[in-house]
Amino acid sequence: QSALTQPPSASGSPGQSVTISCTGTSSDVGGYNYVSWYQQHPGKAPKLMIYEVTKRPSGVPDRFSGSKSDNTASLTVSGLQAEDEADYYCSSYVGTNNYVIFGGGTKLTVL
Amino acid sequence: EVQLVESGGGLVQPGGSLRLSCAASGATFSSYWMSWVRQAPGKGLEWVANIKQDGSEKYYVDSVKGRFTISRDNAKNSLYLQMNSLRGEDTAVYYCARGYTGMLYWGQGTLVTVSS
Image (cartoon, rainbow over all chains, first blue to last red; front, side, top):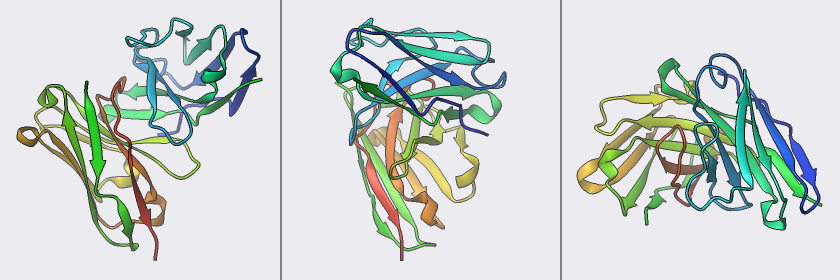
């Protein structure tokens, strides 16, 4: 099973919006509404930011939003803040054998 | 507050074995699927395995099938990963996490280094 495709880097200035894409196939991203996004700061464990494509866990700012179109999911961070600088990973459920796959990660830089 | 605490990592020679543990507290452990996810140094996240609430279903990434075994003890609120025939490419920080389609809680990770 191949990893989901994410751009290696993204950037934006404070207050701006940035969108990170996550491209898979009809067997994963396109086939199920089980796309999640994780934020990871250096040396820390990942943190769930979005699950089931659009849902935010309690405590995650509404500046973070998720969407999906066909085989591509997206994470949008609005009103960029310095603390948003981190690595972001998408993941998707793959029905075959209850598999889970991650994207390669996107390093978000706040300029 | 849910807490997951991994242990058991360390340095092991290629071909060796290691058993990781994950102690859970703060919620009904037996109500949730659990997963192991790893991250090689400087690399991205990779899902390794998951296990159903009662342990009746277990799934693995292809690269560890036949070498790793996930298990759980609900009476002890604990998750395990038995790793055999370890290879250099298994070197990583191993995280336990609750769920698999949206892993809300993660441990701090335990480092496994496979090297001679």
